[in-house]
Length: 130
Image (cartoon, rainbow, N blue to C red; front, side, top):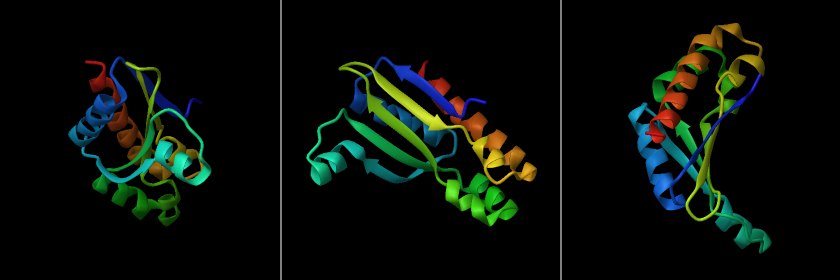
C-alpha cells in the first residue's frame, strides 16, 4: 500500500505554499504548525538545502472522531504536508495518507475517519492541479 499522496506543481515555491494553505483551508484543515526545515538546517547545522516546509494540518471534527476511537492516534496528528522546491518553478507537495491511522494502531474503527481525511487531503491536492 502506498502511504503518501504527492503532486508536482508548476509554481514557484512561495506561490505553492500559499496555494497549498488555501487548498487545505477549502477542505476544512487549519495549519497548526509550520516548520521551516530549510531555515532550521541552516541555523542548527549550517547546511544549505532547497526551500522546504512542513505544514501540520488539522481538521478538528476529524481529529476529534479519531481521538474518540483511540487516544493514541494523537501520535499521528496533525496531518503533515510537505511543500518543497523542485527547481525554480516547480514545487513538490506531499502528504502522508491518513490510511496509516488504520494500519499503525490496527484499529478498524478508524477507517471512516481515515478515509474521509484522505479524501479531503486528496481533494486539496487535486484542486491545486486546476
